[in-house]
Picture: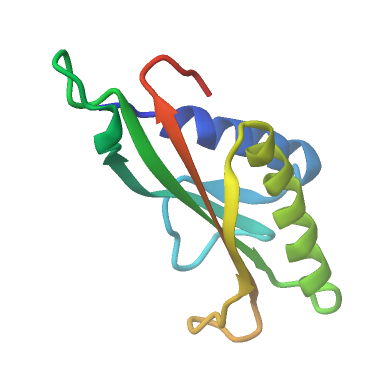
Amino acid sequence: MIDVEPSVFQKCADAFRAAYPNGFIAGERVPQPPRFPAVAVVEMDNNVDERAIDNGAIENAVNVMYQVDVYSNLNTGKKAQAKAIIALLDNVLAQHRFVRTFCNPIQNFNDATIYRMTARYRRRITDQENI
C-alpha cells in the first residue's frame, strides 16, 4: 500500500507547531481536544488509481484525500484564528501539489462555543513519489 500519511501529517504538524507552539495537533479525530487551537489531519481515503494498473502491479498510484479540521475557542477572533490556521496548512499542502476541494465552517455539535473549520484536499500519488 502506498502510504504517505505519516509524512503528510508531519509536514502539517511541523508548520502548525512552529506557528502555534501551545496548540494541539493529532492525526485522528479528537472529540474534545485537550487545548486550543486544535487541528486534526486525517487521511479519509486512499484508493488505487485503476489507470495505473499494469502487468507488474496493481498499486502503482493512489488517490488520497485528507481532511483538516481546525478548532478555536478564543472569546474574540476565533473565526480569524481558524482561517489563519487553514491558510497555513493550505500552503503546506499546496507545496506538495494537494488541491483543496472543500473549505467551510462546520457547526461544532459537541460545544457550540468552539469555532470549527474543515478543509479537504486530494491528490494522486505514484509509488515513485515521496511527500
